[in-house]
Length: 281
Image (cartoon, rainbow, N blue to C red):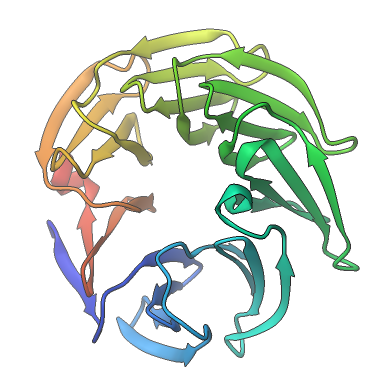
């Protein structure tokens, strides 16, 4: 099974995320739930009043948090209805860059270094200033690990929403992060990958000129790290220990991800999946 069409919809898919046995997709104004076991649409609803290219979602149990320009929507995944909306900005200078969550809060980075924390229990929002530049991406674990325009990896304490560690890893735009155990992998618009110790922020390995144009980290499978560069039309497989190049694979689209040994890709109206044991061999 190499690049097999899993499902094809009637209009282009913007985003796709997997949770359990379901894929959740944004396509036009709709949020669509697809059953992985049957490869069929289980539920769909026109959730949004208009089309938008800025939407992105994260799945938290039976809830999705969907960023939409400067708004954040809370969506009930049972009904596929918006149950709450927060206006966290007003225009392009204050749009949402990244969203993640833990048991108690939803964390939202806002352009130009702003940061919002939404309490799940009450919906109350507090605002903070954390970075001199926009935070593009973050992962919430024991702390919040974030990458910004300046190429820094920031470590943010949730209990006081403050930067407690930082490391200048790249020349600019740290836009992609992966966490595996005590190791953080980062990718930058300077076309490099860094491998960092999560606790000390010590640089373990670095690989420069990974692609000729912008790329991102799609995930880890066994001993391999997969990067995707849609502008170059290529994917590359790296040994995760030392970041040595293993293989280049033609193709690659934005927002691909690895889950349980399968690479999931959005290709227009289709979701395409590949068995990584076949794709990499």
